[in-house]
Length: 99
Image 1 (tube, rainbow, N blue to C red):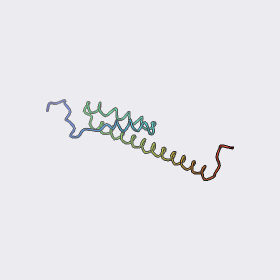
Image 2 (image 1 turned 90 degrees about the vertical axis):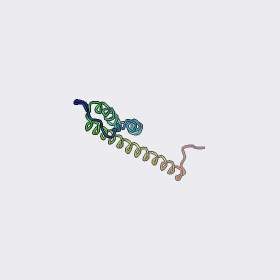
Image 3 (image 1 turned 30 degrees about the vertical axis):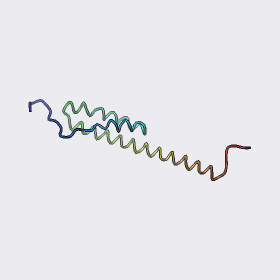
Image 4 (image 1 turned 45 degrees about the vertical axis):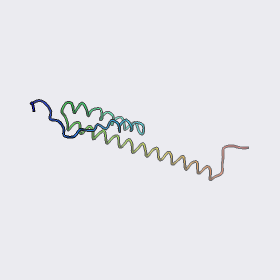
């Protein structure tokens, strides 16, 4: 191995870009830092900073998971409110239409 060349990493580092892009559709405020960190991984690997690349990948994964969890929870609560609101309207017998 020649001096000045980085030693290759034994396992490739996943930048989590796909999960970050999917997370933007669920809860975009937290998906933005995920995408920013995911975009840092490959340049850090090319510079030979494997520890920095691993840290950026871990941050990207953390923000993506948080965005997905919050987005799915908000979606589920909204769906539950719609279902319960519709069921409540049906059960009360009140309708907005008059004859």
